[in-house]
Image (cartoon, rainbow, N blue to C red; front, side, top):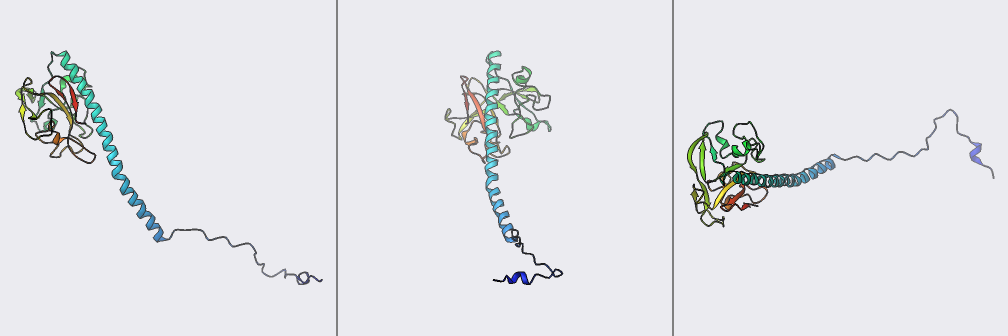
Amino acid sequence: MMDWSRSFPEPSGGPRISRRPRPAAEAAFTLIELLVVIAIIAILAGMLLPAIARAKEKAKVAKVHAELYGIGIALHMYSDDHGGRVPPVRENCNNDLREHWCQLPIELAEGRYLPRSDAGGREARVEDPFHPGHTYKYAAPGPLLLNGEPAGDYSLWVPASYPDLKSDTGRFHSKPADSPVRWAIWSLGPRPNSARSRSSHAPMSALTWYRRAGGDGVIVRYASRDGMQITSR
């Protein structure tokens, strides 16, 4: 049989038809698909960011409890070295130091029970992570120094139902021998300017205590009259 394809060869001068397959069209997002992806990412970020913030807050709370424990040990050592006495409480009415009320005792820094700082209002170099630039707070019934000078006694509010602190009824104690609480140290908590953190019944009323991430209130450690240390956790 004759092979007719060999009898009629393609013209040499004409255009040559490519027989290579056409490349597949490249995949691409449409504008609507891109907007949907962005919206999903925004929703996921909105869900994750609060969880991350709560985790960071919990980490700071754990740090506060650990540091308050160390300060409590320092106070115990100071008391053992000074005949059972604890340092006086300090307050200040000078404008630049007014916010440093009830700072950690200078005596603990001077005696090297805590690291020393030269910053005014925070001579003990232990900073409240929820209140940058300030130490934790310290209070104890007994001597009060105002602007560095003796000014009577400091009064610490304690619930009348002590040791049950879930009460808003109580009284102020200014004499160590009459108070069921020897001293208290505390952080103002994640919302340091909140009404609970700044309450006159803080830190000894459990109604002012920090309870959960995203909330306000103080984080406290205190010692009973017999020296037993208790925490708000």
